[in-house]
Amino acid sequence: MPNITIVVPDDTAQMRVDKFLSGQDEILAACGCANRSHLQNIITNLVINGNSGKFSSKIKSGDKIDVEWEEQIPQDIQPQDLPLNLVYEDDDVTVVNKEQGMVTHPAAGNWTGTLVNALLFHWGRGAVETSHRPGIVHRLDKDTSGLIITAKNIASETWLQEQFQQRRVKKEYIAIVVGRPPAASGNIKTQLIRDPKNRKRFKASTDSTQGKFAHTVYRCIACYGPFSLMRLRLKTGRTHQIRVHMKHIGCPILGDPIYGSKNQVFPGATLMLHSSLLSLRLPESQDFTEFKSPTPQRFRKVMQVLHGKYQKCRL
Image (tube, rainbow, N blue to C red; front, side, top):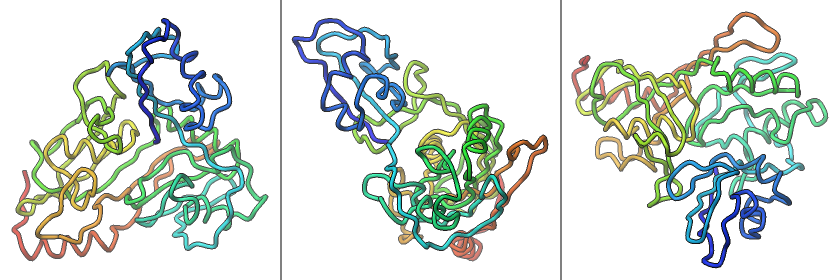
């Protein structure tokens, strides 16, 4: 998500943070907002002097404010005839096995070629009615492949959003990481904050007053020399959560260009993270439906090398 940092000028009297931000042309232009209420609707994270803040918080001269917001999607997204790997579809939802490299929705630097562009073509213009973010109720990073569910109308969009917000959705991933975890299985619970040295990255923190709480459950399936095959379940859904948590326990994901480093055994590896299972209640259903995605080819190629080069073991 985009973000900006602003320092309160020396001549600023004490005031509420929302009032201050709504008077800053730099903030309004960056967020694409027209007024204070619009600003409040799209800001997703507010940090004041390194601590979580509220719109009602009082600020003073010299305070440092970090603002993160949900990027606005243009209203005139063009449908594009792009290949889609459909897993399931009915009148309310479409489940896609997203390919690595495809961006979920249009944003700065990726206005076309996204999953939303492809879905609008597949559904047909006028065939769906959703909010400003067509059909998208959760996201996968560009370099993460796997299952993603989308809504075809406002009612199903609202239904799915509630399932995610109430954490009733089961999401599992597989990953190949560099290193071995501290135990065969465990829970990783931290806060996630922006890395002050690199605003495109996040980092784990044990300070409960900072950032957003994130919870990942992991299980090490097997180890192969200095590599491990992991199964990961998300209890929360934060940006880069799995990638940050794997780095936090000393096991960065193989091929991660942001949180890892180039690997000598697999110098050409791309991000080895895949959304393999999604279980939730479909709109108006009382039963859970489970979707699974097969192991991608890039995983199979790496695993073939690992089996030939190292002895498989378990923690």
